[in-house]
Image (cartoon, rainbow, N blue to C red; front, side, top):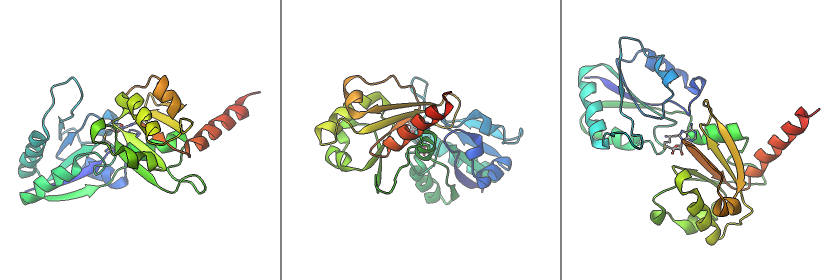
Length: 244
Ligand code: SAH
């Protein structure tokens, strides 16, 4: 019986892998990976290892979580080192908890290797700190759907708010945050493909997103809050420095 390593692949840039993730990938017998994993990271896996795509990407035929659980379990009976590779961190909207429970309930040993979440990748790329003395001293990380299940009162009270899986509903989210008390002038930054090729950073405000939302591709997340101002200031000073 093998051991399953639930590994966070980080937000995209392969250099943001942990050393432990790197070592385990080099020793993997099989890797079951998600859509958000940078394909370059799979180059670390030995050619002899099996690579199995189990991603759920909108439009494609997708496997249910139950099927994925069963597949990992099947491979854990076949190979000593099974790597389950997920984008960002496995315990942040990564279904890592469900896979962990499923496998341990069947007597499979599991180890979790944390990864750099896209939340941290996006904050770093946009120069928007998640907390900063004098600006914000707490962070709320939320999924952006389903809208009717979100606790708007609480979300509107948060200092820094990070929204994953919410780009599609950005307009509605901004409207509700304003309705529940956030100022339309509150800063917003969208980060697409954080730390990856095609990375794009777009600064805006809640009012603008509610009225005339900028075009944003996926994957992307957005950060709302007072520290967005810091990122803006940094970009402005970089522009000033670069001008003749
Ligand atoms: N476990 C992952 C999150 C999975 S949920 C993590 O820790 O990052 C999927 C959502 O994460 C996407 O809808 C998007 O909002 C965000 N996301 C993942 N990778 C991203 C990236 N490289 N850039 C921006 N957002 C990303």
